[in-house]
Image (cartoon, rainbow, N blue to C red; front, side, top):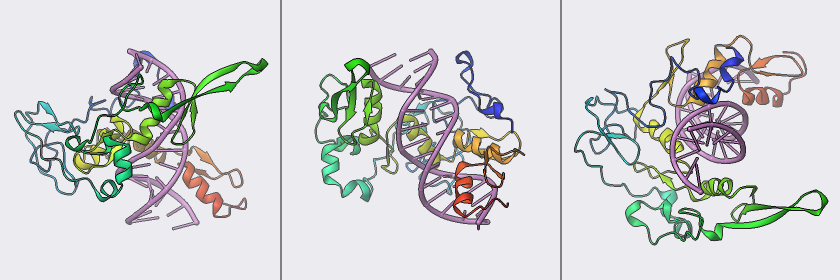
Length: 247
DNA sequence: CTGGGGATGGGGCCC
DNA sequence: AGGGCCCCATCCCCA
């Protein structure tokens, strides 16, 4: 596979060259017609990709978990939180967004930093610059990471608060598109098809990794034996296995 | 041991 | 400023 595939496109054409692969569903978890039916009978949401049923094509609603709903269809009841969320009372009290929407104990203190980013999560530092100047930075109280901008820090804090929760299994994610990708594990939707074979993938990154398998020259090369690998992890495993320069 | 799929995390950029 | 998207990376698991 040519490396040009991985080259970032100009901003005027943000859609990468997955043209043959992209089904035009960017940014939304849109289940193709005839795919799946969810647990409450609504399509687009299903806890198991093994239990597939056809769905009608007249879809016009979006479930708040990301799946599609047919006209007039109501969402199924929210299932109880999984054990990983049920037995962490201190976490739930600290991060109420982990709770299902109807069980939130109290609003999150937002201060001037917007919802989901409590003031107590943010502290500011003055990073030293040349000539004794200092530049302000924002550090996370959960892990002490520091960022130059408040928005970057707020994005990072989402990795602690995990405000995007799957209504089907309760798993929480830091960003909506991570949740969208997760929902595809329920729906079985695979919008990214390989142009070289019949495989399709739910995630663009996984398609990219797969495309490496079609390449004669792999991306990652062992410096000892010059053998190439499609993934860094494969190269690392190869080197950890004791490559002595003989492939 | 190796190859590869599936799922997920996270920083940066653009709109 | 926030959301959406991009790319890179990692881990787990299975064949």
